Image 1 (cartoon, rainbow, N blue to C red):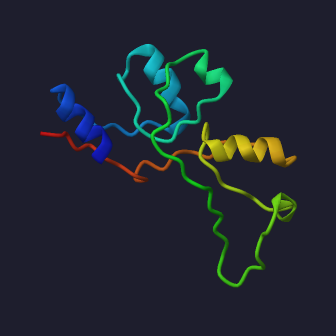
Image 2: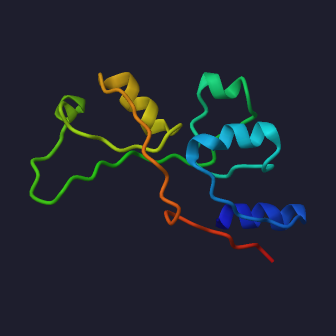
Amino acid sequence: MDVANKVGQLLGVKVTFTNPTWDAVPGGLRSGAFDVSIGSLAPTAELQALIDFTDPYYYTGGQLAVKQGTPPILSAAGLAGKIVGAGAQTTFFYWLRSHTSRRSRRSPPRPTAFRSSRTAP
């Protein structure tokens, strides 16, 4: 949010935050539902053909969390037989698709997750 607010301040425009489902971001940009997405949308070849990306402005490593007391997962092979959650259209979603034999399924969105309706001054 700090990056979005600073960009809005520098451009002299009002910033309004919305919370679409992650996989709705590319379509929302293309349809004009919103003007910009500031977040971790993976610049895949497929998405680069549909929307414009800036040069990356940060990098972050992936993290895996498991229930306390569960044996550690040290490689993609350790995911075998496990249910794995990842945000749609994220770098980690695509990593899982390319490094495991897991099929993806969509969970219903939780309306209270990461809700923000704040408007920048």
